[in-house]
View (cartoon, helix red, strand yellow):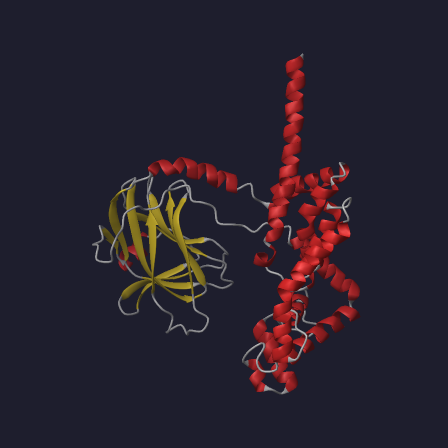
Length: 402
């Protein structure tokens, strides 16, 4: 809702020579008209002034707790923690069931009051929190890259017979992996291979060769039970390329005995020799997994192999979308707009980011909340690229004139 005031200011700059106040007020009035029905409904139903919805107090407290690792303010950083705190302080066990029921409005006002009290007591500390949170909005999230290898194109059914099976005994005898990992055979329903990983964060714990024919569609079925921690199962080529991968972790609300057996399906189209690799996945402890017989299903000759080439280009292009690559040209684009006094362009490109830096930085923030900032960051990168392109074109014209 507060974004409309920033857009109103941008509108003022866009129409600075044409009675800007009228247009800015029109933007703000339009937002008020859109929000008014909700505010009126809240006033009628709850007899309180609630512009849109509740939640500001909750995110304010969690935002403070995010930057208070020693918990010196005594504020939890999760919804569950806030509910538990309110239940204890108010001596209301029913508060531990939901954030806004019962007494949601009163509890939300208490959260706002507590958060504002911390801000009043530590204004400079909180200003630093806002600065760090605003800076974090400029970091691009690491996205999963498009695979350079085509996926399978054949349909399949569970009744398909495997072309090869690697038994638990073979898993134990043929393993190649970490010398610190423990391996043995154990019974849980049937004979299975058990592996206890080492303390590395992402180290490979075991690998087994998978007999396959290049450019064929395959699915490897891996029955696995994670008793502790988290592990990754992957199909990896001889040059280190990852054809297929999956992460499996123990369920927090289950005991070791009650952990389910998951069947992981890994589709792949091999270009050369491949192997099945089991690795750690940042568990923070030694992961424990039990693996049944590996079954390899052959589906038929692969199709759309030509997509490897455009996939390779897209994969490489995605790799440049890193903060270290994108932020410098974005800053150059911003400086260029300021140096050339392009105030209207600045108003368009900076209204939304400034809103997030000034308002969203006050409360708890996740990347999905501030994704809109990235689009304007890329626009500033475009300004820098256009400037470099114009310089290159001008240099080329000068060379051709000689």
